Image 1 (cartoon, rainbow, N blue to C red):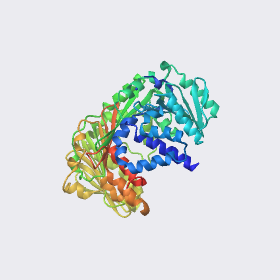
Image 2 (tube, rainbow, N blue to C red):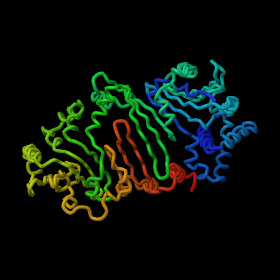
Image 3 (cartoon, one colour):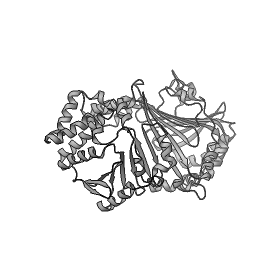
Image 4 (cartoon, helix red, strand yellow):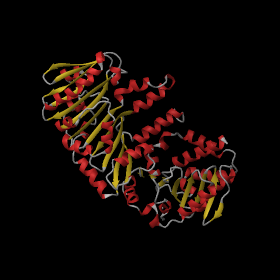
Length: 520
């Protein structure tokens, strides 16, 4: 059994290796009510991964030998032809392969374009001869076979592989319906399919929110306007593998006009970012995020959200944050670094109209601090300047032992930080203005960056010693990742590697093959 599984896996890998070596509407098989649909441009993925370059001929020959070992001459020839030219499998790898998940979260399927059903028939016969699947059965206008809980069916047009917890006959009945789907009742008739097809992506995904955890769904539903449902929101993610980075462009699709209007109104509270306060953080800052806008407008939008109100109600202390929000007028930034392996350095800066709100905030904090006794005290350190002294910083996640947090307003900049040196003396050396992603900040509504290389040692310290060699190779490949929000519909997630000249998918493939021992 293990040998069969291994040989099947090798067969899949080898077919992909040769997949870079044309009629129908097979996409109508994808059900229209699918909660998740993914498309994969196999030919592009194989080409960008450089898989055929990464595995030498000797290794390929060995893998091919393992797959065909023990087969008769006729069966071996079928597989050898496929491995040398994947189109001999009967599947058209030049067309996208689709994956979908149904709303029940348990039933899923894979859809591919059939180029030659006779060749596909020959391939399944070989697999059946090796007891990797059942013999083909011709029924309901399709060829059917099973392997464990997987059911595979194909016609002259489409291949459909289904899986689910239901009984085999029930799954087959559902798959029969999908195979006979008219295009106008399939996913191929939706606007999401059109957007996915036009995305020019290596991989693309469309999903609803139905499969999210119940608690998260409840929170999101509570934030929606009257009459709107979670099913009114769909997400389209288009993934591209480029030299030195992976880019995922995410688009929120609103099917409810009121929902779209609400999102646009909320986004209107935010202005486009510039490079304000980037020079206030050192270049090796681990995490940095920024937004810019009118605090009063932002509070007004948040106050309409039940989730925000519930969060305020659940706070252990009664603090009125409205005056603080209303004082904000411009850029707000939050940066985090690690002073050592356990103590985070956190610095928040915000443009404010004036310092009038500060005294009101301090007055609200005083009774709370008094209740803490000797473990906490607030000390004035100058005009509009205070220091919150903690006997043990661990209660705020800042490491054990005495810790001080500086709070105040200076030159219309509100600050809250536990790094007194950074506050008073500024950045020594390069600031975030020199960060590799610095030029991407301006014009966005929100921006966040994580520097993986800045916390390499910290990451590896959490990994068992016997795995640190492999973990180190993985971590050393990454440089940073960013998230930026352009408007109410568009967000981009980018993962960048240190090697900017080589396609990132090839880098990851080479790393995976090396770590797995396939290549040395």
